[in-house]
Image (cartoon, rainbow, N blue to C red; front, side, top):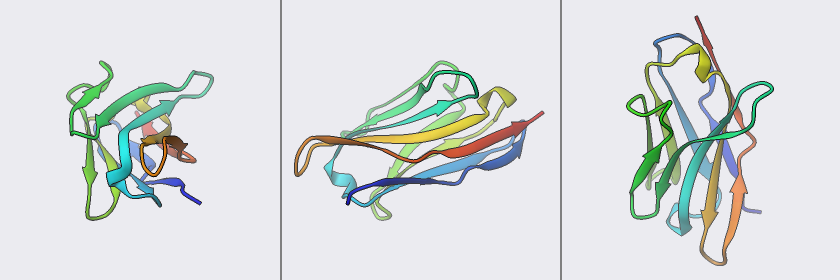
Length: 118
């Protein structure tokens, strides 16, 4: 069964850094695009970053210049490097991927908690 799993969350002080990783049991080369979302308590889930299969990336305004989405073909993961963390970045972070082979389907990870203390 193909699935996604996040890792790398935790507790960090404001101004610190964390790196999240999303591992998929399906090949990363079969992903059409990959995204990171986050959900703060009592808030809706929101898009943080996106990477297309060709490598183009885009970011939400509130993380622009601080977060970087990337892929590691050797590890079959896509990652989110988070620098300059702020308390308002606190939430559960989810990875999401749309695969195009062997058929079109999408997957969500189970989420990983990121807590930024002031």
